[in-house]
Image: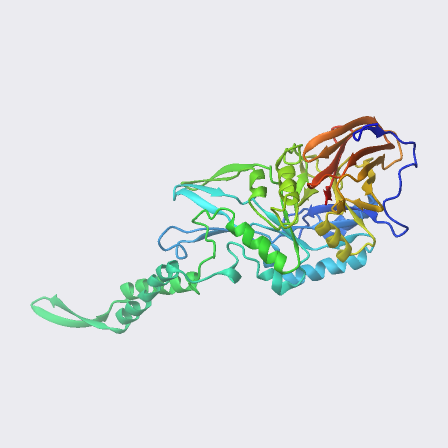
Length: 486
């Protein structure tokens, strides 16, 4: 029998990967909006629906700040136009956190985790009559930062907490100096000669119109531009990925987790605002996943076709960088819902992230998210796939998703696979085992499905992950397991 040989095992033969206090699956919906921001339903309704469907956790991602501003140069603050949607900064961060805690007490069977969806940076191109807005959907989800003051300090365009003084500050302040000549005009009486018949009368008169106009312009400048600070990454310039990396680094310093949201989703449109044509666009940014570091996860499965998690795609290249020591940490692929309401046939619970935890708590879920103890799941409301086992055993050690198995080179290993259905029924399934981004083995069968793949430890690091599909609506994607030899 060769190292690549496999044996299809009878039900129940697969060895356990953990002792009695085994990690248990905790089905969750990640990226949910309520009516606190742009969702259709109150938190109570979302928790009630989740409870009815057997969903054990909702990871909320309410809009952090949706404030889009444009100003005509050089006096951008004075000419600034703003469009804003509901966000937790406006709602109040402490109020938001308290609201989540209140509903969690009302529905203890559903774990509500407060998170935010952040637009780190957007920018404008074009002329004042034909503008294009970029990257308002190039967003990051932030979880695990539950201190209101810390949340308020996130480096985000239009968040005044992060503003600084630059040369633009001097330009913004300059029209404010009109207050001085405005006051002078109002206080000074000018002598004017007026002829009345054959008589010349000298009249002393204040320049009310000019004084009020100049003073008003100066006051308006001060009011609109105060305190004359500018965003660290202002919206009139493209700063690339620097704002996004700055946010990732800040969240990491606060002990939180960041998730790249919908990396292959496209957003584009156009609208006329009076004589001004305003268009907006966010291009898919899968390649940018390889250009940023230290984030926790990325949207791997969501309700559109994705290629980032295909064999040899951006995710596999990222995992290979980690295995080669070029990254300090890997990133995990999650199932991302983006649930706002029931529009376009969307339902809560068809896109899930299943966490593997020892307890049902916020700390345990965040720990599983950071460590990759999870799998992404696309399913129907009626039935879905279940990961019964994905582990690698060698020597006396057994590891699971997100972990690393270190053994002497040449040591035999077994990759154990088990895929079931939530209703314990028989679903046709195709299970693919990927090894370093390439197909190592592909099986077809029916649930309950069991298989073992045998290999040996190499001197280099090897990455294994599992991709199982049943029908168009069913897909299960695991976090990787790393195997390295010495």
